Image 1: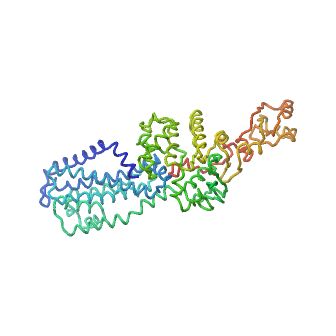
Image 2 (image 1 turned 180 degrees about the vertical axis):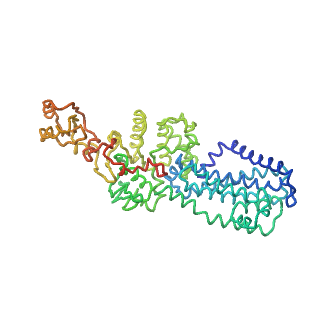
Image 3 (image 1 turned 90 degrees about the vertical axis):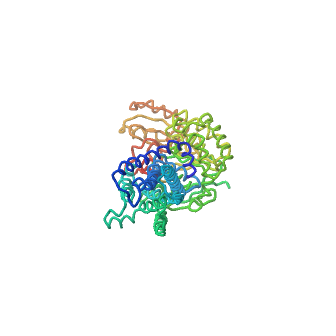
Length: 244
Length: 328
């Protein structure tokens, strides 16, 4: 399955990457420069420096979330590609895992491209940033799996709107990307620990700015546990959906 | 081995609905085995169990000696599937579809390329090899789907309603291809609701309706046993039908009534019957024609294969028509 997706990717990647770069850059430009003028330095860095790692994370998140939701749904439901593959020695669980790996690939690709761009803009301050792609792998797994769960249960493609509005967007807004978490009430800060994106942003920001410390291990472990715990769900749901 | 598929008391329930209700059959190597029946008969469910997509609820089903409950991979490696709806990959070209599908079987690239070219040639698709799948005609898409089912050189090919929705010319072209494949020793399992297709292609067939097997045999056997060589369709008002049938009692092999039409099954010679019909002034029209499998089905169930006025909506479960994601 991963192979099939990569074959398709090879045919369309130039446009794909181009679009991938443009939107995050626009965010960076508009918010960084626009708001940056009005906002004082946060924790010793400019606003643009503050949000840059977050932009890496969100770009990667949207990439895998979109891939494993809309794109997977189209493949499964409209094109019936999963059915075609399941008639071969490959079984459904393997198809699902293949999709997850591809979603992760997109996450790493997308995030790394942005990383390179912000590095060229001088917003990356530390060689620790070379570890960012590893974090992007975790990011990819997290959001591919979450998206795939929805793909396993939505009756119609329109229902993904719920996924993006109720799950992805709130995470996007409240994970410490656009403003530091400590301006929010204590309760909200504690709840933020439940959001995978929060942990990812913390890791990415520390790596790009070089402020690494042992507490990062906790965030890393949180993500690993989350990924492992959720891993069986997409397969179970997809199996229940397609095979009666 | 000569028996390639064996089913015993095979049953399939979808929740509370019984799609297949205890059937037995055997398929031999090298034959074209047909499963004939109207929509909702359970044909697609039977083949879906053979290629290990849906699990079996009860009973025994073995393919090439392997049990469908345990040995999925072994079976799928040796079986090719051509589903009812072409689920070709729209994002790939004609040739790429074959190559990517080959990769699912772990076939190495060189072998896959060679086989793909051979198949494209066999199905007259070589000129379209680089075209995007979206742009080729329906008949070509269907041939490509069949080609794809053969990329791993299977021993058995399953075709679920292979010519539904195609124009007559494409249909005949595909029949030709299937005949040639059979000559090469491939075992074919075919489901259809087209009697002509079953008559033309199948060596042996089962007629299914509502989850059970009504009859089994070769097309000529079934026809001559149940309905004789000819059928006379007589248009006559219902209240006059009993009288007509009385007058013909010993001369016909059997009959079936559908509305204003009485179907008379003639074992061999229709001349005596025609004499009597010509004398009867109440008959509106009549028509003599050779008998076919549809008549067999009509005799066995009182309904036609394609026209299903007598099925009440509540009984009809058509997995292939639901918007769900069930196979095909």
